[in-house]
Length: 340
Image (cartoon, rainbow, N blue to C red; front, side):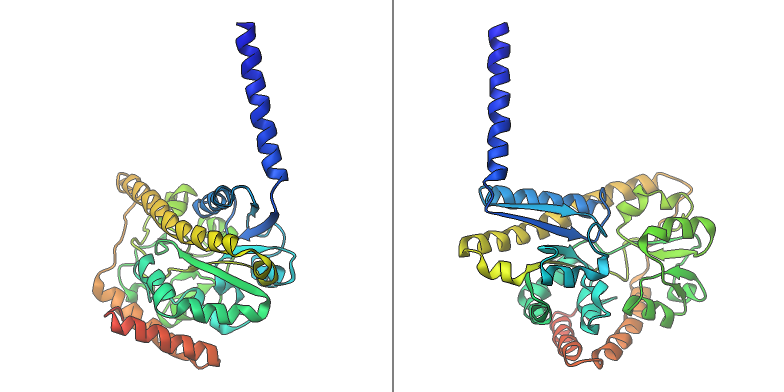
């Protein structure tokens, strides 16, 4: 028995030394910041992505994934990555709309997409990747690839069954295109950070909120008092930008560049499946609660909202050469596939 314990202890010690040696042997040690708090599904999946990169690269690349605001505010990771303060980020590009209005359109073209695979199809085969790469390169950024999540749900303390029901509703919306579209739809949007949504709903500062996916809203307890969630989402399906410092990227051997590109493609598929499964489980739990009414907008109401959004797309398109090029490219893609 003693001999067996000694052998087991030696095996554990050997494993620890091997893991430590692998970490020390990494050719590249990077820090990437995300746009989620630790514990959210998005953050967990991005951490898994970093683990996959380490495995795929044979331990040559080690990436530390940090939550929102860990090093710089979420609106400043673009500059932080370009200057090397961070080596990369996984984030929503619309946070950078203050830098260029094209980030708002490319990051979250409100009302355009009903499914994440529609957005990824545009990025990968409709010209989206090329336009976004061109947009970020002057900032010292290399765009590795795109991912997306399920359409974001909507939490509300009052029933909103039609576009007309948005009239006068105080709702939380991020600044930029989303804010302006909800305003044109008749709502009274209030710009609040995501960290204040729970308290704002609970205290009556707002009656509804454009927030993240259904599963996260449910896990955070928002449906305890915002008992009229809208699902599936009808408005917001943001892009996830996975980018890194361009100077570092350019210095990498081709095999590691290929590994990083492949890892992002894998992450995009895994993330969609993971969140879709979590949403299904949360929706089933919510439907079993008689105090919660899940509202699903009709196709006619979704089309009404999309028409309002399309008018705002045109307004944003005129703001710069890049926004116009993006508008022309994405609307052509949507029209050709009968998605507009």
